[in-house]
Image: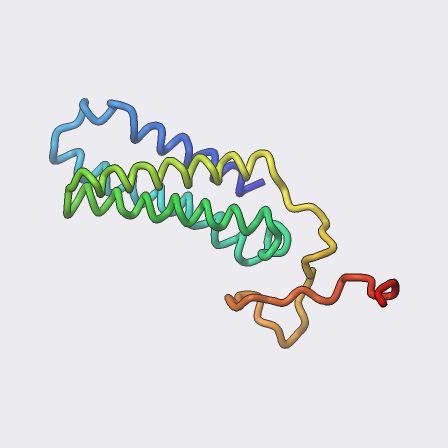
Length: 152
């Protein structure tokens, strides 16, 4: 449920950033507000991504969680690139790339968080053995789930 709320607030924050509300601020105020905005948006995107990788929403290798991880990472990269554009280097191709990554990732992860939940899947393992690291990054092989009794 937290992933849904945080993804929703990420989408709302992105839409607020695309509005023309910043025209009401002076350039000095805009620097401070933009820093707070980017920090909050990164936190709103990073927390559900971290908890998804921890396995709070089903196994992290589940197809729904994999897709959420990809879209959330794309949105996070777009947000960081847009912060780079705002503070350091402004190029039209970088603005275009950052905006499209941010929009695709945040909205895609938000839609996925709202409408898709990991189901009980026979092809992904559940639980961890004592010696396993729940934060391991390497590919975890799926146990042999095929019924080989009918094969020749």
